[in-house]
Length: 206
Length: 206
DNA sequence: CACCCATCCTACCGCTCGGTACAAAAGCTG
DNA sequence: CAGCTTTTGTACCGAGCGGTAGGATGGGTG
Image 1 (cartoon, rainbow over the protein chains, first blue to last red):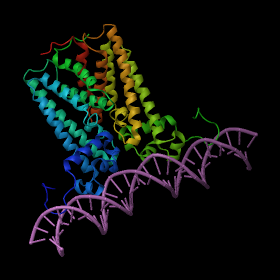
Image 2 (cartoon, rainbow over the protein chains, first blue to last red; image 1 turned 120 degrees about the horizontal axis):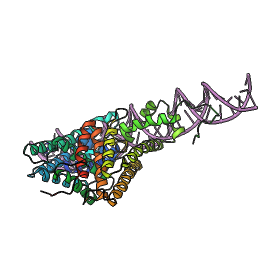
Image 3 (tube, each protein chain N blue to C red; image 1 turned 120 degrees about the vertical axis):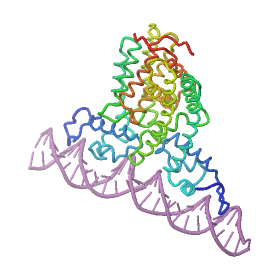
Image 4 (cartoon, helix red, strand yellow; image 1 turned 45 degrees about the horizontal axis):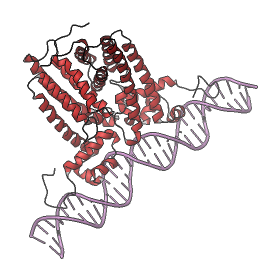
């Protein structure tokens, strides 16, 4: 749409990135359906017609806000998965995730989950978009661990696909915990436990 | 309120337990805010005034439905934690959880999470009730594992509190996955991975 | 059969929702 | 400074929300 400043007509009184970030916070805190237009415009500091002129609709605003959020998350994940070993990758992934879930500069938890796990039928697309975002992250994790398996970098008997799902599920569970008030330290202690999985040789089950 | 049949006045045309179960399904599928009264009454097979005469309000209906759901979940969890060893308890907990999350006779996932992780400010109580339910389950797990630690039934160096949080978080993550369509087998494979944590002696970290 | 009374059903309430019409305002261009 | 273009602000729209009033209904009880 707007490529830089149009240089004609009345100039915009707000920065698109800024108001997107504020919108994301409201969606994050209250979910898609729990975020009313009044709450959104209030937090964004703009009024309805500006919102609609810029973003089109509540749903499109959400898509934009979520895309922005997801890009950043993906960048963090990518950095984690660039670690040289599977163990280091998983550790970096889970540690940075736990840090992010409890960072003080935004709502606790994760927009991909808080945004709307369950929605009314007419907003079903929202849950789908969020699920697709989470699936993309899991796919990256799976690729990294599949490579690790090829390189002999995983303990014997560990299926990389299952391990990816395990790590992703744990991180999602941490998001749920964070949203309910769990602290960074509590999540990191859970990560400590999880990492035993990757570090060890196969079990002699009792 | 109604203690059995009042034996006076027009008899009720519906069974309270039955309509509660149907209401729970709607909340489960669409979340508290996504479940409209029309959807609820439609699924319950009763009309609005009957709903309000019986349950008082949408919120009270939800509380009743969730309490019913949570009791049953707690019973399953209690059975799992009655296993003789920590390993068997955790395994039973995670396996039965994964089974329940993907059972075909109700929506996928878990009402405690689908119901409303994030809500509009006026429905904040809903998220709190759900979080309290999950916390109760985690507390039961924590007690069981603390006992196990006292009994020397945990691998050395494992903090029972952190292990409880880990197990609970994983199960919540599985709920998120199940809601997005993960199969029972996929979740069980993730459980396979997780169980290595409980089975093994402490890591020599690479 | 007349009475009583809780439940059922239709139709409606006020309110907030997401979304928009329209005119005043504000910056460039000539 | 007139004209053009885009954004801003106010005030509003129909629809659906959660919730309710009041009469019709249908079972026991005398």
